[in-house]
Length: 416
Image (cartoon, rainbow, N blue to C red; front, side, top):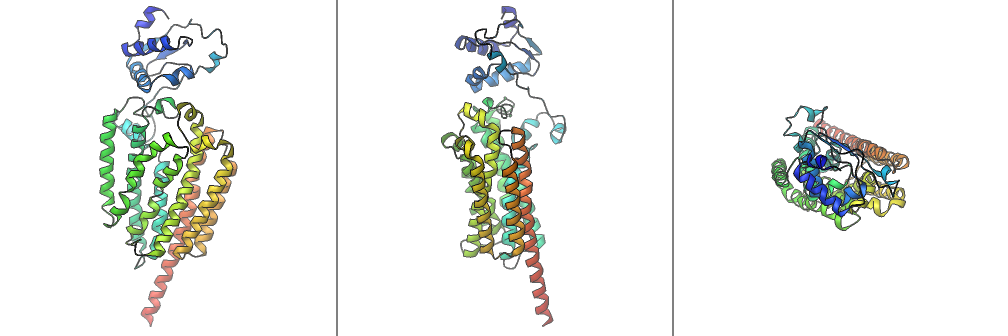
């Protein structure tokens, strides 16, 4: 590289580049860096840069209008295959469609931080809340009315939206030094430097306060059930650093709503053994479901995770994934059926929820191509609605049947 070209670079970028060449002199470059893009580096070279250096590259290059590197630099002549391994990562581009495109530019990074444009995680967090509300409704004394069930479900959705965002922010704070090394996560707001860790921490605190504001709208006893879940939210990102089974910790976290529907409708789990058994079985069923869908999700990052040192069940059991998915599906359906038995559910639930979930899971496990990032993402998104939808429909239909029967019984008593 000629000196004039080198001095066209921003100072912090030039310093990082010189340090990198000094340490990894066998790697050379060939790239044009335009406004908003990032230098093309050999994969090994890019991985070995620190997260702070990568953020400097993003920030510095984004501030310069045009930086052109010499085009005649030889690329590892001793290793012709190296040239084929060079890749130019796509630069960050502000959203041009959807809700985020109409937000003020300063708000966009915070909306991206809570994954507002990727709501599937919110739905996965919400479904266990909906399941428990519908399963608990016939057990309430008196039986919860449809209006009460609808209001409680809507409140749960608001809480899921807020707390999922808080969980994403906590995760990105933990992973701020790992995300720049993973293709799918390198442009997240903290990783690319759009939000400082301090501002992200303050924003996370505000989200938790908003979540507390939703929680206090439920019966007071819900505080004792809801607050402990915050410990799981904070520890999940740590789990993937110390175990190959962080999906299990995520399952414990995302399934918490399977317990919350009972106290939300006034059922004291400590005084009602039937409800406690139903809630416990429903909770563990959702844990199995979470591990199942997140194992598919983890296959999208399996190569980058291996390089960055991130642990996952997909890495640990890559060769046995479909067998494990099948075992998790059987576990999920079995525990779901056990929850129905404990709650005194009827055939509508067992056919609709259990049978429907078994069918949708079987189709997903058979058809998903674990080697295709696009296919894994499609099944992760749509599997949410397929399996979560049929379970909800079965539970909802079971509740309406029982509510109708209760009304008929009440009419008969009036006639007598």
